[in-house]
Amino acid sequence: MALGLSGRYATALFDLAVEGQALDAVSASLATIKAALADNADLRTLTTSPMVSRKAAAAGIGGVAASLGLDPLTSNFLGVLAGNRRLAALPAIIRDFNALTAARRGEISARVTAAHALTADQQAALAARLKAGLGRDVALDITIDPAILGGLIVRVGSRMIDSSLKTRLDALGQALKG
Image (cartoon, rainbow, N blue to C red; front, side, top):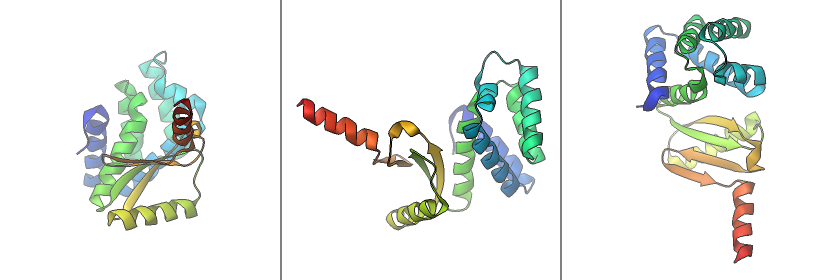
């Protein structure tokens, strides 16, 4: 069960999606909004700036939802987030929603941080490798962070595998200092 503010919102959306038999549509809409947040600085500003009023945030997010073709449940949910000034929690809500969806499918959710976007083949290979090691299907939640320079950081539950180039360079720097 997801905890905290993002977990409560994600659980509410998940329950509504299951009840309305719209789980796949909501999942697809959340993937679309996640990609839009990653690609569009103006959208990130809309969701995170405290200077944007509730009314302006609701109008802006409504327009974004319509232009992205999001399903009605997700569009309404985004309006509720805007009205409650919770749009800044959207990335965490999407992460928690994806974890709930993965658990429903019997999968484990793995949070992956990569320096650049992974191709479909790379994602499939990573999922297969994790499945072999964990013995269960794995749903990947991928975040792009150029600051890690290269490699991956994979979190599954409380376990973390950090093979990022930044971590390796930091360790080398510490070793050279003595």
